[in-house]
Image (cartoon, rainbow, N blue to C red; front, top):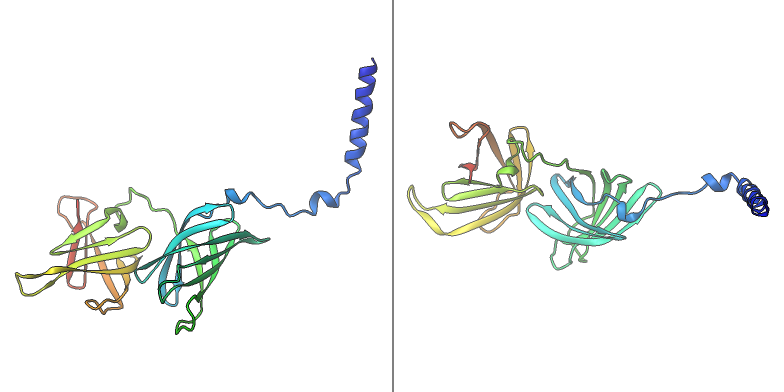
Length: 246
């Protein structure tokens, strides 16, 4: 009996202590989710001074994040910190600093990492580069069964040339200069760019080289480019014709 009475007194005392907790302490608290559960990893796309930029975050642990970005075919690693705010997440990520185009990104993401307001500043000073303001949105995952997605073919081949449209927004074009109708140069040229698809057109912004001085190109997609293969395509542009390589 004395154990029952003691238990009853303990429950009564605990109930009074609980009910005496002020209401405002229950609700006047900002509860942030565990940073380890933040869904930062992914591919993000934005308009960077008129040209597309792709930013991939492939590492996120605690307050540390890392990945890379692709702009005009130039790929640069980025790494930095992630801090949770009342409205979402703030990421500060640096490029290595050993390239004249390197800079620092400051990104303000929403809580679900669906979009971000960003700014970029050059790391190397003095610099002729200017600060950039832009917006990033999370790119949709590609359906690997969608034959309409050119990045599923990985590489498209042509006559003494091939082109690759990768899922991270980068484009690689390998070609041999044509000397005459039947002869090509022995040295292969490689030019890198950043691509985006607009309906049946592929818009590529290039990183210029000594052999390739064009800023942009437009490639056109033609479905069923290979007779007898439903869903296949032919891509044409810059005087070249490409079909899927297997």
